[in-house]
Length: 427
Image (tube, rainbow, N blue to C red; front, side, top):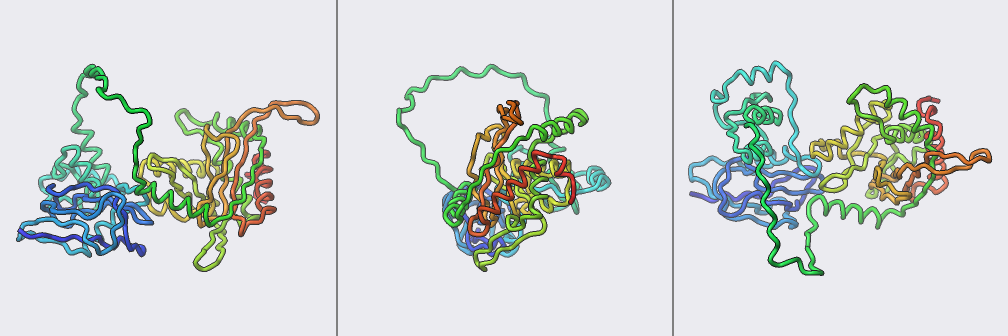
């Protein structure tokens, strides 16, 4: 027997340390090569680190929330003396390959129908050697009690991808068992003491969110601007377009219209579609609009990105905004889909309230917030009419966007949304 000391590998992109988020193993546990042993968080991404060798865990370094430098001892695994072990460089490549934008998620590899059929026709027992798949899929299979040798892989060289495991689970699913009455709740012998507290350590994505929000508020002098919109005509157009949709199709919300109007307006206000590079002291203005869509997820706030949004029409824009938001919520977003936004829009949906003060998504210099739509009595040409209104609550980096320019941009956006036909006219 011998001890294999595995050190935290270089996870790429200049990473010098990583935060321990969750240990999947503990001393005394048996692990197989490529089993996920720990989840770590860098400033760029969440990463599932696989075991470089199989054996028994002797010790681990760091508790959730601790920072571990690259190259520091991470885990010691007792192995058979004759067992081959990959070196740390190979392990680093394997670990980095599992990285996605936080939190980590497996990505299914694409394959055509012919390849999938060929893989299904080859008995799993004929595949020699260790099964090729990702650590995340190994974990899912282990938790479900599935032998991966029995799963047909449709990926390159027979690699098992997510849809292969899903199909195998569906095929072997047993008939549902009859429901049994839930046991009656047993009264607690010791009711909760009034004034009791619970301590929750701030780690992982929540720590990153807190850090970035603090830096944004500390470093960026926010200029807030709120304007009321009459969206009666916009709502009429939205309902008309949704009425023509086939049954089951996803209806348009206000956000694609807002996004399309914003893209048009930014042509005249390029200073708002920009990044501030603090290290170089340079404002970088973008011609393309890489639209960030602030999205609430179970893990916290994420900002998935629709890249080159200026090339999309209304329906495409709505579909892409919906797709990247759903991918962020389900942890399936690719890393490039969570980076690179040049301006962000945010909405609290039905919880939108009257006014909000959105925090700028640095290094951007502007963010546009949508509040709740509500009917109000409005005076029009001396007569009272009921109109559908909504506020836009926006924030700008006052160092680089003057108050006049910020107000002018929102006024231009207001005009576009109040006369929605103009959104579709290129001038």
